[in-house]
Structures are given as structure tokens and as C-alpha cells.
Image 1 (spheres, rainbow, N blue to C red):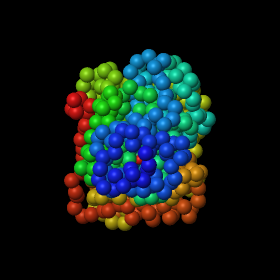
Image 2: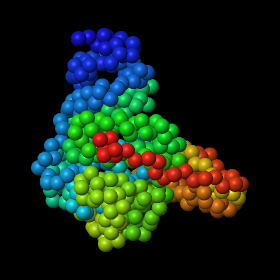
Image 3: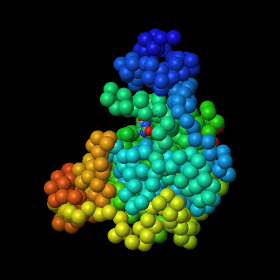
Image 4: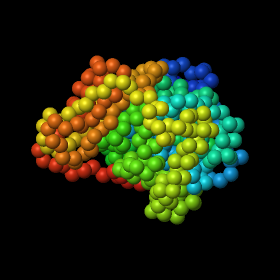
Amino acid sequence: MHILDLIIKKREHQKLTKEEISFFVQGVTDGTLPDYQISALLMAIFLNGMDAEEITHLTMDMANSGARFDLSAVQGFKVDKHSTGGVADTTTLILAPLVASVGVPVVKMSGRGLGFSGGTIDKLESIPGFCVSVDEAQAIALAQKSHLVLMGQTENLTPADKKLYALRDVTGTVESLPLIAASIMSKKIAAGANGIVLDVKCGSGAFMKTLEDAQALARIMVEIGKRVGQKVSAVISGMDQPLGSHIGNSLEVMEAISILRGEVGGDLLEVALLLGAHMLLLAERAETIAEGKALLQQQIANGQGLAKLRELLIQQGGNPAVLEDFSLLPLSPCTHILTAAQDGYLTKINTAKIGQAAQATGAGRVYKEQPLDYGAGIIMKKRLGDIITKGEPLAVLYSATEERCASAGNILADALTISDTPMPLPPLVLDTISYRQSE
Ligand code: URA
């Protein structure tokens, strides 16, 4: 077999066989294929696509390219969750303790943020002492004890994805449905859970800008799950404004804690409850979404969700006192209040730009190895549809220097549109694709 034949085949819109896809992934993993030929095939896939069978083979070969987690020693139906990435999208920190608190094990590997979307691992690392480096044996022991582990990806998880993603990043082939689906699903399958809930973000602050694209991605990932015998459900949720009000690493931890304390509600809580309820449905811990949501809400009201987060912090070295005292979390010293230049209604938010403003405060990375300012970020004071009075605060920015605050403030001001007449609010949840529907 020769890689050139595969490139020409895909260039000519032909389907690759299981053996050809395995040959490709093997060559990517062991380094025998040169980057220029891998890149050429990636571009051919980007332009001409793959069908469900090809994407499933690619996913499984990528999942098997490194060591897979074996969680069989942990009793119960293990659930995982993945978000395709958004702004102020802190659902994991809320739903993982809630779901684990009703006895459903959550062993979740998360990534770091790059670009305008934040990463759960970075948020967790803003908690003094919290350790995200956990190996398989430790993860099993912690999950057996507390049902909850939040950890970084292990070194040898899906090496083929690491190589392919790095090449996609520099060859204009990131935004490809088959490649995104295989990349996400290979990592989730290798991480060893029995069921996966996907939060596919759609809107101005997401990879997928249109509902059609988000639905296509959600459908193919649910379909891959079905073909490999794994329960997968996908929720398509709106990203036409930041999900929560706090953007930035320690700021998002504070908002998640406030929600688990029962002090704050809103869209972030709504989406966290919905995704958590889907996880309970997969684990057969609830029969309906309404029942699942009610159960999780009860875990907020009775303090069990917060208690589970405390357990997580203690077992992974984080200071549990942050749950009562936010002054123990980092907060950058310089602040800037962005005020409204006119009266009206907040009618449009360019969410990607808000993410860029947060990046400019120091909360996000522009390049992969960039160190983060954990205490930097933005607290939004207004949401879409709100009535705005000239001169009132729209947001507060936190950064290490006045200059950073001011330049992030300029980007933020540019992201918000205030108009004389109100506009209809975008829906929070646009669609749900369940493994049950595709049966
Ligand atoms: N997230 C991933 O893990 N992979 C992609 O290709 C895109 C988003």
C-alpha cells in the first residue's frame, strides 16, 4: 500500500477502505509517513469528505493509536461529557460534581484552552494546589472512592490525534466535519467511559456558526457511537453570547462555586442541568430529562453537589477553603469598567470577540505554550435583550496591567451592539440528538 494512492483516491472523491485508513493512522502514529503527504490527505478529506463508515474507522484507529483507559474496575456506568468549546462555558465544574453526587461515576479528561475558548484544566489549575496530572491507576482508585476525577489528558492518549491536530492547525484543515468528529470521538472513546454526552456549541462564539453545521457534527458523532456500541447523546446549545457571566479561569471557578452554593442561576446553570440530566439518562439513573434535572437541582439545594466538589478538591490537592473564601483564588489587580455609550437594548454580542478580549486580559492563550494569568478576565454585567442606560457598567475587566485592561476593554466595546429597538432572543438549546432517536 502507498500513501500516494490514498491521496489520489480521496482527491477523486473515492471511499477509503478500512485497511487503507488503518495504514494511514499507523503511519501517522509511528512517524513513517512524511508530514507533506499526511497534510495532502488531510486536505483531500477536508475538500471531499468521508462517509460514516470511513469516519468510524478513522475514529477507532485514532482511539487505538495509544493506550486506552480501562475503567472496568470502577463499578457502575461511567459517563463523560465534551463541549466543542465556547466562552464562559464552565458546565463541567458544575455538572461533574452534581452527577457524581448521585452515584454515577464521572472520570473526565479535559484539555487546555487555545484561542478564545477556555479549557477546564486551566480553570482547575487556577485553584491553589489542584493537581490535574493523574495516571490510570490513580484515576481508578479516586473514582472507586469518590466517583469523581477531573484530569488532564494522559501523555499517550491518542497520539495520532495529537499529530493530526498539529498538522491541521497549520494547513487550514481544522474546520472539517469528519476530522473534528474523529478527533473528538477518538479521545472520548480512548478515555474509557461507557456513555458520552456532547455539547455542540452553535453561534458567534463557536466552531459551528450555523445550526445545520452543528446538527451535522452532532449527528455524525452520535452515529459513530452507535456503530461502535457506545451510548452517545448530543445537545446543540447556543453560543451567541457567553454562557455564564464570568470569563477567565479563577473567575469561572467562582461562578461555578456560586451556582453549586445555590446562589446563582441563569443560562449556565440551565445548560449544566440539561447536560447532566442527559448523563443520568445514559446511566439509567433517571428516566426523563425532567427527572434528571430535578434530581440534580435537589443536589444543589441539599449541598451534596458542593460537598462533592469539596471532596474532589481535597483528593486532588486543591485548597477546599476556596469554596467559602474567594479571596484565596487569584484575581488580577487592575480593573477597568466598560460603560455604555448610549441608551437602548443590548441586541447583539460578537462572542468570539468577547473571547478575544478575555485573551487580551491574559486569561487565554494566543500560542500553545503561553502562560496564563489565572486571575485575569471579564465579568459581564449585561445579557442579550437587557435594557441599557447610558453610562451604566456593561462589564468589568481584570488584568495585570492598566494597559492590558484598556486594550481588552476596546476589543470588548467593539463586540457589543446597543440598538434603539429590541431583538428576539436566540434560543438557549437548539436541538438534541439522542442515541435513542438514531436507533
Ligand atoms: N476539538 C477537538 O478535540 N478536535 C477538533 O478537531 C476540534 C475540536
